[in-house]
Amino acid sequence: MFPDHRPRRMRTTAAMRRLTAETVLRPEHLVLPMFVSDAIAEPREITSMPGVYQHTDVTLLRAAHRAVEAGVGGLMVFGVPGHRDPTGSAGDDHDGVLNRALRALRREFGDDTVIMADTCLDEFTDHGHCGVLSVDVNGRERIDNDQTVQRYVDIALAQAEHGAHVVSPSGMMDGQVQAIRSGLDAAGYRHTSILAYAVKYASALYGPFREAVDSQLTGDRRTYQMDPANRREARRELDLDLAEGADMVMVKPASLYLDVLRETADHATVPVAAYQVSGEYAMIHAAGDRGWLDAEAMMDESLLAIRRAGADIVLTYAATEVAERLGS
Ligand code: PBG
View 1 (tube, rainbow, N blue to C red):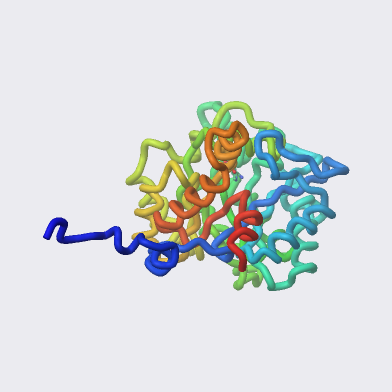
View 2: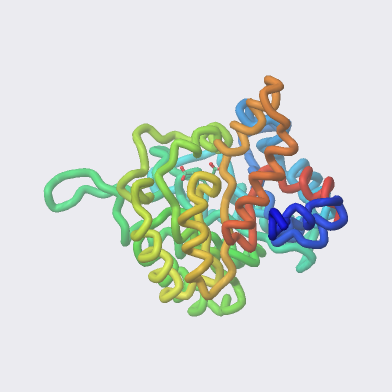
C-alpha cells in the first residue's frame, strides 16, 4: 500500500514529538557570558545587544543570581577595565575588575554554579590585541606568541586564586593550554579546569562584542585566529589542545560553523562547548525588532541546532531568558 513508510506518525501530536525528540535543550546546557566594568557607575546596555549589559560590581551579582536561579550551567565573565596598557596589567592585578568580580561571585555562589573567566589580554591592552607586541628580527611589530602565553599564565593564576573554577584561554596563541596547565599545577591549582577556545575563527560576528568591552582594536586578528576557509586545521587545533591538557574545548562562533562543530564533537574526548557570539545574538534581535522574524523561536532553533551539531555546552547571551522559558 502506498506509501510503505509514514515518518509523519511520529509527528502527530506534541506529546509524540516530545517523546521522540533526538536533541534536547536544557538550562544546564547554557552558559551566560557577562561583562563587568569598573569604568561605569550605572549598568550600561550594549546598543547592538538589547538586554545585554556592561555591569557594575553590584548589578553583576544581581544578574548572576537571576541566571543561577533560572538553572543555567555556568557564568563566563569578561572584565572591562578603566585602565589599559600595552601588556594588559589589569588582567592579573589582584584588584583588577575581573579578579574582583570572580572573588565576589565565588563568595556569593561557592560551588553552586560553575564560574568561568575569560583568560585573555584584549580587554586589558591599550592596542586591543589578544597578545603583547614586540619587534621581531626583521624590525616588524608582531604579536609575540611566547611572551603572550607567559602573560596568560599570570592571568590564569590570578583568576584561579580569586575563585574561577574554569579559566578560558581565548587568544589562540600556540601552546597556551600547556603553559597554563603547567603554571596552575606548579602553583597547586590542580583542580582548576581549562576550557580551551580550541577552534576560534577570525569572524565578523564579533562586531558587537567590541562595543561590549570598549575594544581598542584597529585592524584584525587574522594572524592568530583561524581563517574561516579552513576545516582541516580545526582538527589540528583540537588535537593540540587535547594533547596539551584541555578539560573542555570550544568552537566559536557557533551557527556559521556547525560543520566544524560536528566534526569536533565526533573527535573530542572531552566535553565540547560552542559560543553563540555577539553577532549571532545581534542578528536575531535586529530581525526580531523589525518584525521580520520571531526572535524567540529563532533563538530556540539556533540553540537547538548548535546542540544538534554536537555541543554539550552552549554559551549564549540569551541564557537566562531561555532557561527561564524552559523551566528548570
Ligand atoms: C577575546 C574574545 C572575543 C570574544 C570572546 N573572547 C573577541 C574577539 O576574539 O575578537 C567575542 C565574543 C562575542 O563576539 O560574543 N578575548
